[in-house]
Image 1 (tube, rainbow, N blue to C red):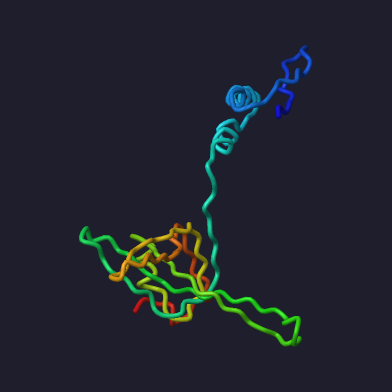
Image 2: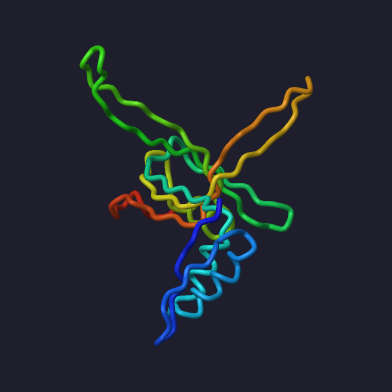
Length: 165
């Protein structure tokens, strides 16, 4: 099925419908881009394969576990809990559901987490989902999904406990 879209016109010319299919999509986008002030953003958005973005606000279940690669790059693993409270429709009771998230931080973020975060610390983490796949000794394939953090904000109020240990 062919759909039609009107291309922005130049002064003095009327809008002309053009058929849009995969062959013409690139030309159409380029014409739109020429007319837009923020053309780079539109072009990047048009060709974007997808968005992999996660935002978590929660509390650490334990102190960060930090290790260093052979290249002396810091890597921290965090376990962050998020909770939601709702009323159970059957019983009418308030129920809290807690979800645990595996977080991996690299380099400076890992060092900051190691230095300042402790069990119970509240954090804001932005990152992307990554799924790891591995096979155990019995040949069974396992999967694990984690969040690789790009940004972290410590949300605890400043106190004597927030000083480095």
